[in-house]
Amino acid sequence: MAIEIQWVGDDASLAQHCAAWRALPYVALDTEFMRVDTFYPIAGLVQVSEGERAYLIDPLLISDWTPFAELLQDPQVVKVLHACSEDLEVFHRLTGSLPSPLFDTQLAAGYLNIGFSMGYSRLVQSVLDIELPKGETRSDWLQRPLSDTQVSYAAEDVVHLAVIYRHLKDKLSADKYQWVIEDGAELVCQMRREVPPELAYREAKLAWKLSRQQLAVLRALCAWRERQARARNQPRNRVLRENSLWPLARTQPDNLVSLARIEDMHPRTVRQDGEFLLQLIRDAAATPASEWPEALPEPLPLEATGLLKKLRSIGLREGERLDIAPELMMRKKTLEALLKSGYPNGPYQLPESLKGWRRELMGQALLDCLAGAGESA
Image (cartoon, rainbow, N blue to C red; front, top):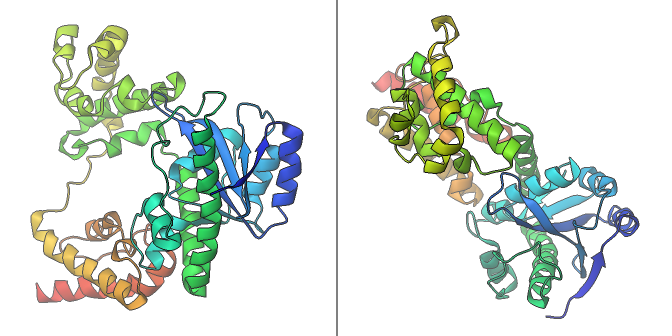
């Protein structure tokens, strides 16, 4: 399809367009970026559309992103994106700002029970009956000039996104529309809630199996890995592979030969950082017991599986009643956090991650289910 394209390649032009976009009720946004061997995404293109034309902003030519940041933060303009977690990173990196209010079309499709976690091509096919060309998502978006195929791909994507927004918005009830906006706000909050490097060890695989002294070593390794990934602008696994963390903390090697034998340990890491890692492990292992992290809770036992299914069924029933994709109702992590708050005998507390309409509609039913399970045990 022929789409009118306008290039935005200087600060004055961007400021002028942003002023015009802020007079609109919504804008569709998309990004193309590279992230092959970097920690942070590198923006190659930013696309904007109101549904009529595609505006392609060249981030390699823009030095002042202030007007765009103001557009992102304008409460009167809905920002429409699809499966936007990486786009949010790009915006935050470029502008220091995040979009609000945010309408994610992938979430909206779930609220309309069209499908859960739908890819963009499938959503366009389902809603607009248009088959998008494939093959440009992994191309080089930092090359200049961009190919005609790349330009066409980027322009089509964002124009269709604006049209999809109108279709979905018309079908959503007022409640569901507000819930999509609430979930969008939560995505933005999650992006802002950066885990401090010192707490990264809590997310490491099998960390719960380690003693408190071993956790002190794991904490030091994970914090160093996180800081180095950011400082070097390299993926975490390039600094130190995920699968090496647990055996390093458990066995605490004291020489380069032992270090090199650690599971999944890359020879480059041994050469580049081996001596430093050995010293880091020695220092962390010598941490006074009073400063060791608390032991991490074990995963729920197999016996809790039945209870987890009962809790999930509450979400499934409510999803059926509301005609919402069942996967969108309650995250497994939320239900596990609820169970861990009092398993096996209670009392239980609703976790912070259960909030908004989900807490309002299902919170009490979940607690009642657990209370009933306790009485029948």
